[in-house]
Amino acid sequence: MLKRHSLQCLLVAWWVLHIPLGLAQTRDLAVEALVFAQDTPTSEQFSLAATRIQWPEYWLDSSDFAPMLIAEQVLTSIKPRLDATGHYPWLGQWSFRQSIDAQQTGEAVRLVGIKSIDGFIQLKRGDYLEVEVDVEYQPDATQPRYRIQETRQLKFNQLHYFDHPKFGILLTIQP
Image (cartoon, rainbow, N blue to C red; front, side, top):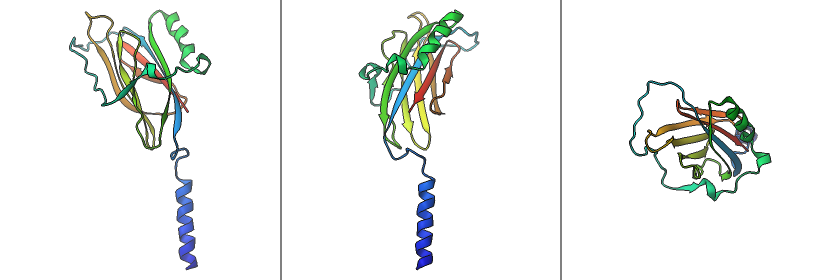
C-alpha cells in the first residue's frame, strides 16, 4: 500500500514539474506590428486579382482595442531608423493588448486604418505561442496586391520579421 501511495505521489510531482508555467491561465499579451514598403528586385509574377486573404469566420478590427501607450511600445524606436535609410518607407503601425486563455486561439485582429494595407494577425496559445499573419499590401489600384501569409511559432520579447520582396512586417509580442 505504501509503495502504491509513493508511486502516485511521484507521478503527481513529475506532472506538476513538467507543466509549462502559465499554461493554465489567461495571459494578457501586448502585440505590436509595423509594416514598411521595400522594393527588392524579384522575378516573381504578381497578380492584379482580388484579395486572396483567407479570412477567419470572426475577427475584430484593430481599432476595437485601446492602443498601447507610446512608452510601452517597442517598435516606435525602429520607425526613425527605417525612415533614415530612405529605402523602407513606413506604411503603418498597430499595437494592442489581447487576453488569450491557455490552449485557445485569440480573435483575429484586422489591421485597419491604412488604405494600402489589409489583413489580420491571429495568436494561438498551445504548447507554444503561434501567430498567423495574412496581410496584403497594394500601393495603388493600378498595382498588384502583394501578400504575406505565414504561420510560425514565436518567442516573447523577440523581434520577428515577415518578409516579402515588396513589403515587410516587424512583429513583437510581450507578456
